Length: 65
Image (cartoon, rainbow, N blue to C red; front, top):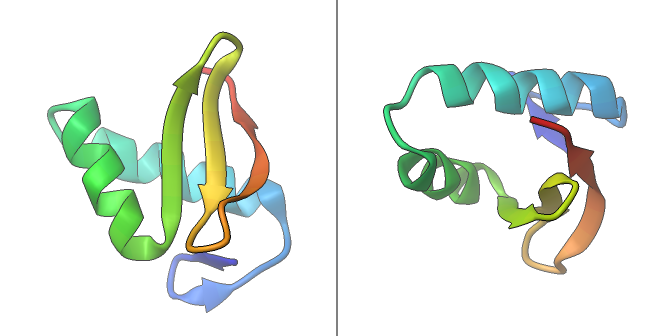
């Protein structure tokens, strides 16, 4: 997976990257669009935000907001 211009298997690094990127934008829609560019799909679910890796749609985990 990709986070901060490097490949990583550490989900904490990925989730930290996603959170930092969210702080840079005004809307959730813009953030989701930016994350698609990095190869992540963000979907709001009951428990938080489900993060999937594109294009296979492999669920990586849930980011609790």
